[in-house]
Image (cartoon, rainbow, N blue to C red; front, side, top):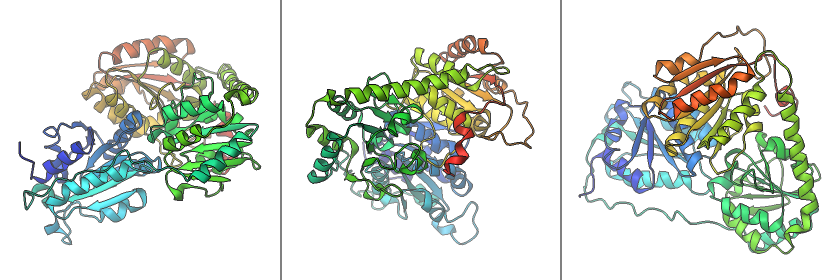
Length: 550
């Protein structure tokens, strides 16, 4: 079979050759040449209801698999609609290739329909950008975009193709196909820096590890487990790294909600693939001690330091760096057995406090109790992924979910704090792991931002169980002046042929989840509209403003 020469077919084949498996898109005239070619290239196409969610579904697919995905959006408003998804994916360090159509070159500067300077718009919220001006350039630019999105510190790579360039045949047709990039190339820190880090950690009395998103996209699960078992250190996982070390592993303290209690007590913290932004309280209290020693590992030198200057900086791939640290470890694993037990007790005490709060009598359903019941049910059901979304609801969700595998616990992973990611993340994760149910625990406000994607879930038979935390209003800290909503979210599921029901008491939760899961396993989306006490706010959210994170 001869190589394609048509612009859209060139782009589709280049995506496939670079390892992309899924494309999420909302059709438009500017990208029609690409969308009509994806099937011939062996790519799976998922058509969404909004461009923002096309990008977020690609991000959800990448979060579930650790591999890059692609989104395609049309020009003008298609691109501007996609901006929130692009900004969130890039801030979270998720490898997504966004291919956007653009006004044809012959129509520029004429006031053509949907013409806008798109590269200028995306510049602040993308890792890498390029415009293709000749059809024969498409394969090389698309191949580089996949490389840029997924190599080093991941992010969004943006490719812009004018309509007439997409629609033309390549000239000359025998342009060499790109050979690709070295996908397994990994950087390691200087040997002297590794030795300094090992010396500091070996002499510590209470060392601890915090693994962030960079560890996940480095594919560091095996290396992290080996390091934890070799050193005996407690490990906390956050953002995309949840599940990188099984929460049931004796050295895993779980998420920052619980493990952070021990992290602040550590005298030396090893930070893997996480920048010192608001998500980790800028590297200071209450998660990090003022006198604590910090070792930071990141593949990009510019991500090192900032508001918290590390005592030792290790510039390198997280997995490769962990292997180097493990190979150089000089003391027995049981040296810190007492500290590990202390850290485990602190994390267990935190979980106990959240459990006790969720048992407090309220009017109707306590959102914390709902989160815990959903998490337990999802865990017992062998869920492919558990997604949490919203303001206060995401805190309850994170505090409840047990992560056992990489890519199994998805939530807002950046300091952007973008709401509405839940359903597109769930659909993306669902198509990445076919046949396994996906659970979404989401606030009613966050759900409303992307609720129409329930149609996408229905069209592709994604087995998603959506639990809407319905307190009838929006605002993390119970802002007044907002008229309560009487929206009945269960009816949205019925509108697409799915299952929906409303519950108002704690005893109704598990039976409703059982019915919802039964429906989801038959290939239709299910919504459990759970009416919760609107006066309940987590202690974290009550104290949020005092942390000066916004």
